[in-house]
Image (tube, one colour):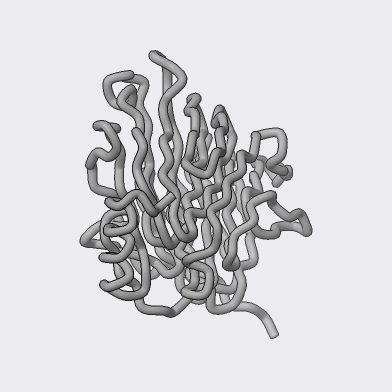
Length: 276
């Protein structure tokens, strides 16, 4: 039986905001327009060559109940957390942190000039894994497989594409690709049945069943086979899909649990020094 071709369900633009110590960014998931796309809780794009937009970094702050996936296209940041982990994130690398039962971490720029650009994705954890021990690992750019397409490339950060498996190790099923295409190049990517999927175009423009311009997130429906055609040179986009968890979500700032009481407990644990 042939698989359905993905079409665009809806389009979203991000909102300009700031986080950490004044780092300017665009929030694409986690807004009033697109609060979440199970299992994805948040997607931020950050990018500037003005040091004032990023120099403050993200001083120590807590998390509980989910994973953070930071993909750095350009720039250098240093990670340090309460579990004793330290890491260095640089061009093309990924930082994968499982907050689990709780961690306090910081992400601070290691540069005072030049371009910083990247993405942070929050991935929910199912109830039975929200209180697991925290973990962290750096994935350097040399560890991320990149496969050649017709007039393009695809980096496989997590999941499987063309029999190649990415190094990301999520606790739920996740496909995370960074795809680069020349003008008129086409790409076809199978997506697991019933997974929630989206693309985010961060350079250029791509056509699915309609044109998707730069800085636009397109939620896909009929998860089966994604087909896209680049309308511009140097079209670059993220294709991300995940197995929905389907559980209640209670959010409170840096904590994502299943009930309001669990969120309040997380705040109490943090304030009393028990978290992380």
